[in-house]
Image (cartoon, rainbow, N blue to C red; front, top):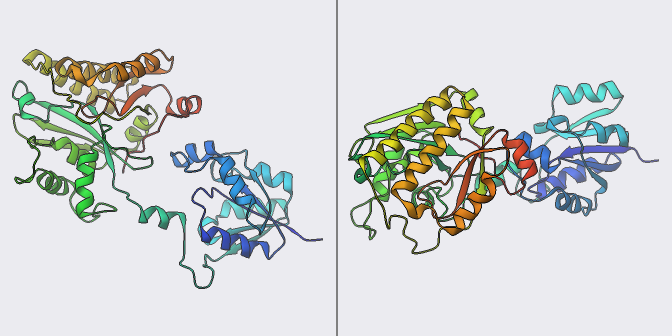
Length: 389
């Protein structure tokens, strides 16, 4: 009777390296595969899967080296414990990247043989891994503005100087065009660095280069793109920048305390809406006064202080006030489509505040919630942003 062999993984970007691993593992006996659930990947890696757990289960089961496959019912890196205890394999196989003392001890406690395989491709094929596949795609970050949007335009800051607050986001989701996440600036960056930002350049200098490249004198567009887009993309973590009647800020402050960044991730969700329609003018009907700009800058100050204090109630209040101040100056940020989403999500018990990123008019509704993981479990459409460290 053949021995039972067990392997476990996410297999979200199924590739030839996985298949070769299955082939090698199956040489030891009948192969059983444990697959990480959608919720496990969401909580452990903080991003949604490319393929659902049922699609991944279907694909893995279809591979001829696999005897059977199951969705693991645990979570974290040891999500397979329940599956192993049901299957009772004789052999547990991992590759060198997936080996750990915890897994080795787990097998020893259950009398399971523990085998570590080298990551080797099938002869004649290119070595593959999920990490290498992700790196061949565009990994340029995007940015999310939290408060003070529009202050980076001199026709706003001339009334009252103030701060804009941004966070740089990992592209763990589809970054859609015309949705308030600085895709125009991101597309300009792609012309120079198609896949990722240079790693050995000072982030502020990089942001200056991007800003100047996007706003070169010969371009056809008549307006100057705000500096908060380049800064928000290029400078990691939490950042605020001070504008005083100039296009480039006079001060830039960053905050990369891990506790604060994790706290923000625990309370922010992104809800996709329709993109802003072509030709839609957000600045039409603008009404900018000193009082309204003062409301914007005060909300940004309060928002920054609340974030550093990890005070959720104060953060939600300032976040809402910042959005209200933006809309008071640029009423076209909201339209019936946007209002429909605000009406729906603002009534939900866990939602404390909301705003749109960028110029508004469509794109995403960014929510402040009591628990982002819990909210995303109840609302699968929600995206959990991952702040770039």
